[in-house]
Image 1 (cartoon, each protein chain N blue to C red):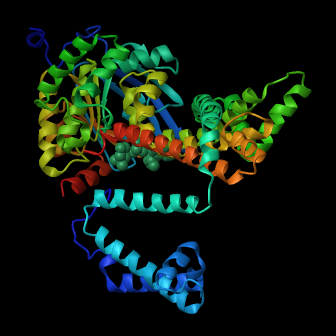
Image 2: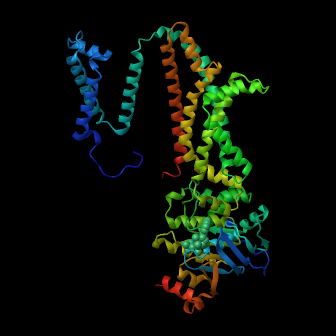
Length: 324
Length: 260
Ligand SMILES: Nc1ncnc2c1ncn2[C@@H]1O[C@H](COP(=O)(O)OP(=O)(O)OP(=O)(O)O)[C@@H](O)[C@H]1O
Ligand SMILES: [Mg+2]
């Protein structure tokens, strides 16, 4: 825990008043959901010779088995250290998700055939569209936040209008409007730049608010101390305020990056050959939609995990002064 | 060898007879509320001034107008011969000559103690990294923060933090030091170490304006005590006179309250 107390309260899951109702609810839900008829349930029931009779008895048996496995698992995991618990539970849940995907009866041969193209064309496009958009959005957000905190009425007007408009319109609409609307004004724009522009403008608007709140959270005394020492406004901002605001800005910004990574799939609507577009079109030809969707999902997930790890590193760096 | 030459106060007075601070007819409003009412105050070079008065009397507001942390609407302020306007070059020139210590220390938490003291030297005075560190270490030595230079502010006690704040202000080699209740946020046992540092500074000839309720410090160090109430200077005088024989009723009431 981030800030644990020095009291050894009985661990939550070791209290009968918690685990007995907990397991009871699990059991009840499993029975109600007719666990015996599920694919795993059939296998389990088969072991006890109840495979051909997916009735109430099979449901009870399977629910009981699963509940017992869960109870046993929890009891075992509780003997580990907190770090081990974290990793073990993470891995178990990941396995469950993968099993879920696996249950779709996938054609791995098809995935193997397509994955190269999905990665070289789709992933690459997703990555560079997202990366460029993230950079531009961050710059827009910084400018927007400083404008919102300035005493310049024109800057304030522009910044307020900007965040209102681009947070207010659906991203999908923004993509269409830039791709289809700009040519009406005589400026023909390609699909990729249109997508990048829409993503940057939209996420820049969200992040403007994050940056503004981060800057505003720094106490007045920091500005005053900096000014009293004679620092110019720009130095006060870049050397005193922003480095402190970063601690507050980074977690929600990481969130935005991850959200943007996945929202970049929206630019597929204007025909950009990114991950989502390819996953959809490649699957169509042989009616293998699910394979492609799951593959693309896993790729998105892995990318998000990478971003999470990077965010964690940066957070630790900016926290080092304050957490000691 | 640089270390030997430096003392706490090493800038020579700009002009011998010129007062350090001249405030004339100063008025300030927060909206319709008048926080300062026609204040006249001159601080001589080398003078140690203590400002006291009840809460809300305008003490902070007054000393914060001197380095333009607060604006004012009427009257004038001249610091070291520089008339304080809202022009960047005037404010910059004044802030270079005036150091300030705050009640809440306001150290920069993302920087080490040493970086706290060197940052402005490098950015404002254009001093090289190496020279800035030598200077900063010298002043950190003066305020008796031994070998804590590479810690972060949050790792120091309140008294140590406030002494770092003093060293940070001194590193810029100001002519005038402003203190706004420098010991009010400290635990009792740390008040003395900060007051000792300030007494030492006073002994070396620094011009000081100190808002404080530490009457012992005022008696021992101040050349003059200024008593404010409701945005006005009500009474002023040498400490012995002011403390033993305050003339104004409001000053008597105030003193009887803080001296219990
Ligand atoms: N930003 C502000 N807006 C409105 N009124 C203010 C503001 N700052 C101060 N004041 C008012 O101005 C008056 C003087 O405030 P100031 O902080 O100078 O008092 P002080 O003498 O330093 O009091 P204390 O001993 O509590 O620090 C007070 O009545 C206060 O309420
Ligand atoms: Mg005050």
